[in-house]
Image 1 (cartoon, rainbow, N blue to C red):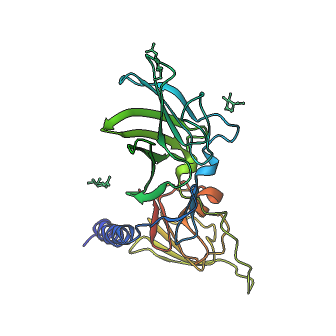
Image 2: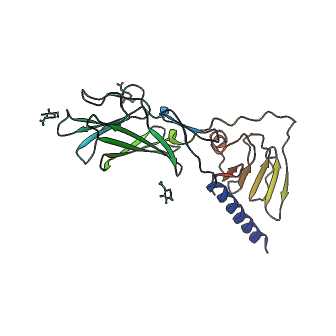
Length: 266
Ligand SMILES: *[C@@H]1O[C@H](CO)[C@@H](O)[C@H](O)[C@H]1NC(C)=O
Ligand SMILES: *[C@@H]1O[C@H](CO)[C@@H](O)[C@H](O)[C@H]1NC(C)=O
Ligand SMILES: *[C@@H]1O[C@H](CO)[C@@H](O)[C@H](O)[C@H]1NC(C)=O
């Protein structure tokens, strides 16, 4: 087997191992109040960073083709008009007669669920006449969406109203990775396996460029120093580190994983 072939085989087996660990890493939202989803890995999604806090709604009087205008605000209740929509999460107003309002979601008791790496909020309200209306909001994670963008799908089935809100705050957030305190000088040292194009390092990357495809750093000291070559995949190991933390702090340009979790694919 040529060196190139063995390299391909190694990369494939690495991919298989990494994809197995991805599927086993489904996160479950442990809901804490109407705004917060907490995950086992210490991450969280806080809808309080998306909703407006000044009494307005994030989605305000958005006219839909179904003849109604919709308003919705995550986390912080808002009020609209003189009618039923007082301190609620979602409101529907009839365009043809703007004194007709329906509450389509209470702010107090939503159910938050994390499915397929996406947070869904369900906000229901039962009117005095006993009619239950429900808003389903898909919170789409987009790290680049500094200000939220919204979409109103309207009444997608009887008494069910759908919205999407895209924001960077819909991405599970883990605080900056704490840099572990060194117990020893922790001077990085590496060995290179030229046959398999793998460089194995302890504590950190030693800075010497080598013709490798994979750099593995055991006991990573949290210092953001990686090879300049963007073709090299990085595998970092440190129990205190997470994908989100490393991404926020170090922004590696390479494909990388943290403790076997794939953070950025090749
Ligand atoms: C609340 O803030 C939003 C966005 O900054 C703004 O568009 C809206 O006019 C504000 N509403 C009030 C009542 O100040
Ligand atoms: C608008 O709705 C209100 C409340 O249901 C009703 O009293 C009023 O007559 C309606 N106006 C029109 C123009 O239909
Ligand atoms: C999750 O994603 C899979 C694959 O893309 C899809 O088949 C499934 O319907 C999705 N589930 C939900 C609840 O969206």
